[in-house]
Image 1 (cartoon, one colour):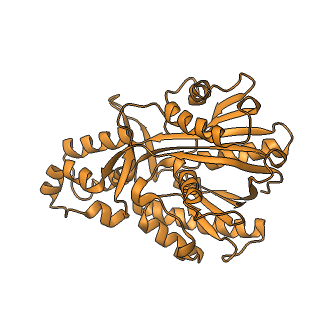
Image 2 (image 1 turned 90 degrees about the vertical axis):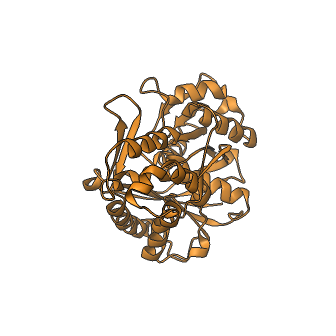
Length: 344
């Protein structure tokens, strides 16, 4: 997959204001920790996640997405009336129907001359949306579009804490719920356009994608049968190894497509799962750790927002700078892997 003429004109993230530390979550789970004799500090030690962030009030995903979208448009050189596509890419949704994008579109005050739709693919939705916008730009269908993501993991985390305290679980049966305790919240948006509209934009080069749907049972989430919220269970250990194996194969295809090797990227941004995933991924792909920028210690796993939020934060802090070749290594349950290269 090669991209010919699309650039990221602006990319902006929004950090929710309320911090939940791993220690705070363990404090809420104290009855479970005491009963199972679990050591304090286990959550941060195993994941490298010190904290995650949430909004301090009930918020719809579209509201979070629109806040990031408005900021991305303000920073962009593109007139809002010229945006022709609006994609909402989060796991989190306002409701099943209509599309969450329709609410974000209205809140951003975009024109009616816009294609408005959702793209949902677990943690890969944002990257998938970048490839879709790029393809539409390369095909001459549009000149500019915006992709937004507003993830709010607080309802899932609250529901998980409730389940862990209510159910008669042991050290083995709590494992499928562990990944839920790493989930956070955040929002991100990117304006993507034809290079002629943004000569100094961040050029998208292309990449590779692979699927291994034989492992689609390793992480599954849905509305609970009781109607009391979203529930998710993950085989974290199997997910780790199956995901990194798929990433290894995708990395090989990615290098072939862009004629890159392990030394080509100046900076690397991955999906943000935790320290174990990051360590194994870099070791398996033969990548240099100093090229990595991670946000999971302070944001946790923010779903589809995780990778682009981290990229936006890295650029804001000057870790990613003009001229850098950036490898974006995305993976999501399903399993699906998508890797994109960009020249910043």
